[in-house]
Length: 155
Image (tube, rainbow, N blue to C red; front, side, top):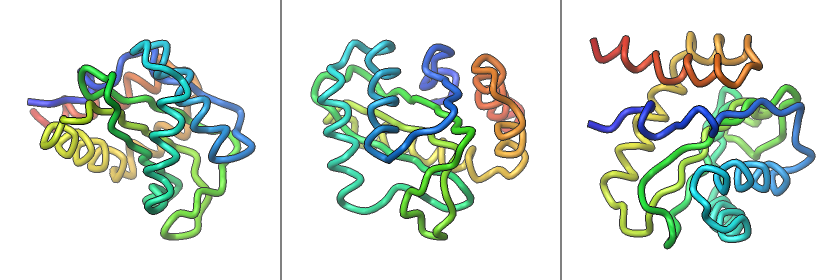
């Protein structure tokens, strides 16, 4: 059973004042992901940008779910960034994004990657979760909101 507490480590959650561009945001995500996984910053940035070039990962309602597969990643993991200043993300509903949950997976992750993406997508579609995330900037609180929600839903 895949869960957010396994995918999202406390040190992979960050509140940012804002990012000047999608590229800059991907650099921030890469920086956090590098700290968690040791995977090269450039590799992460390139993989996220390549995926984004296929089609924007802004899913609407101020949420983006950028994701990529990388050769040197051992298991699926996430990086959550809350932007205080929303960023234009070419989202389906044209709304700027302030909640970003990036997923990085091994190249051969297959179903595990899709299950993780579905789980993150379900969690981020919950209006109550998003409202709580937007009301907080403390990374520890943000992590708790994201990881506890699922435990409640599973019960």
